[in-house]
Every structure is written in structure tokens, then in C-alpha cells.
Image (cartoon, rainbow over all chains, first blue to last red; front, side, top):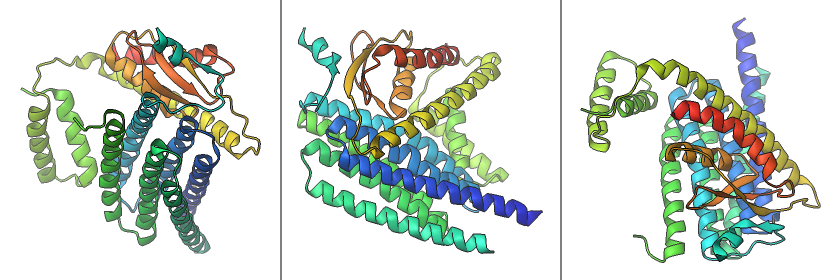
Length: 113
Length: 93
Length: 159
């Protein structure tokens, strides 16, 4: 029975590690492929929200590591990742980095007034 | 027994992948298009190093690396926000 | 006196980080967080403990809704990135908010930004959130529909 629980724990950890690594790869790939700054931020935000959080879930799940530390780090990433990407995008818009192939821009009309 | 070995191998491969991704991002920061692009790259490198630290903690079975990651995440966040503000205003405060 | 909310938050954080639930450590943690809460936020606001379980229930539902939204849109963005032709139609869309308090509006903007595919670029003076979307062909309606569910829960949490 105990071996059974051990096995299930390890399988969950394995799945979390593999999916997290795949999402990190997809995020970096998006950073290389997407055309401009704003769209790249969507891809890089995903590395923090998916990749590292899934690795931390694996660490919490194996539970020989600090349970509390992992949870605190997950909450920290979930709160601070979007704030950092908002700061970068606001800076990009204010120094006037153009959007490539944008189909609409409501903010430009609003600031023209 | 076999599952433990598979998990250890997956962790090693994952660590290698993360280090390769960090190398790619460093190259991209060096050859960036503009300043915001480089800032995104620096932020991404911080996140990837955090992931690599979590993997090291999982491989070595030592939770002290999670503390390092905690400090790393906090410092990376503050430096990203401060640099974004500096780029816009050309001054810190 | 210090605000109980901050005292509780800092003590829970201390206990989670030290992971040691002995009485001595608990005492040290409460004393430390008492001093910190007094330094950070010396206010006298009253917390109504009667509404606490109801708000915790709504908060749990909000977290579940947010996690499901994050997973769905994350898979969508991953599919967009992996498609060879890159089918994106980016654009900035103005989304009005009807939140009363500042805190609810901040949480609402956070919820929009944390889901991949949407990102708040700027917030206007009247509370309009200018959101950069990876797929702007649908216009406001899709986002407003998702936003309405979250906002109803948020209003009940913050009040």
C-alpha cells in the first residue's frame, strides 16, 4: 500500500516536471518567434505562471522539501509575474515602441484627445 | 524502484534543457532589437534561473535552494520594475 | 493597536517559511509579526469576523475560476506559438470596469493580466483598462463576459 502511494506521488511529480519543462520551452520559443514586444510578453509570462509553478508543484508533491516554502513561492510568482509584465508593457508604450500588425489600438485614440 | 530512476533521469534532462534555454536567452539579450526587448530577456532569465534552482533542489533533495530561489524571485521582480521605471523617466526617483 | 489582518498574514508567512510548529517558534513568530505589523500598518480598522467564512468561500471559488481560466488560455497561447504560420491578430482594446473600490479594480486588472493572451497596458483615469490581446478580432464582448463572472465574485469578497 505504501509503495502504491509512493508510486502515484512519483508519477504525479514526473508529469508535473515534464509539462513544466515543455511550457518553459514553448515560452522561450514564443520569445524568439513572436513579432513585437507586446506579443512576446504574453509568451514570457507563461514561463513564470506555468513552467516554474509546475516544477514547484512537483517539489511540494514529493513533500520531502519545504512544503511551506514551495507554496509561498507559488503565491509570490502568481502575484508578482503579472505586475512585472504590466510594468514592462507600460514602459514600452510610453517610450513609443510600435506594435507590428496591430488590427486596432484604442489607447492611441484615447490619448489623441 | 525503476520509477525513482526514471524520475531522476527526467530531472537531469529537465535541468539540462533549462540551462540551454538560459544560454539562448543570454544570446538574445546580447543581440536584442531594442531596450525593452532586452529587459524582457533579463526578466525571463531570472525566471528560468528560478526554475533551474527548483530542479537543483529536487535533484539534491535539499530545500535550502528554495530559499535562494525565494530571494532571487523577490530581487528579480524589484529590479525589473525599477529598470522599467528608469527607462521611461530616465531617473530612479 | 495593530490591524489583525496584517498580524495574521505575517505570522502565517513566518510559520510557512520556518516550517516549525513548536510553541517557542510560534511565540517568536507572533511577537515578530506584531512588531512588523505595528511598523507597517498602524491602523485601527475593524475587521468584521462574522462575514469571514462567507468571504473565504467566495475567495476559494474565485481562485478555482482563475486557475481554470489560466489553464484554458495558457493551452490556447501555446497552440498559437507552436503553429508554424503564427495566427495572431494583436490589438489594444478598451475595457470598462465598474468596480467601486480601488482594491477590487487592482484585483480585476491582475486577473486579466495573469491569464495568458491578455495584458493590461494602461489604466485610464475613469478606470478603463486598455488591454493588449493576442486575438483582438472578437472585440470586447468575449472578455467582458469572462470578466463579469470574476467581478461578481470579487465584489462579494471585497465589499
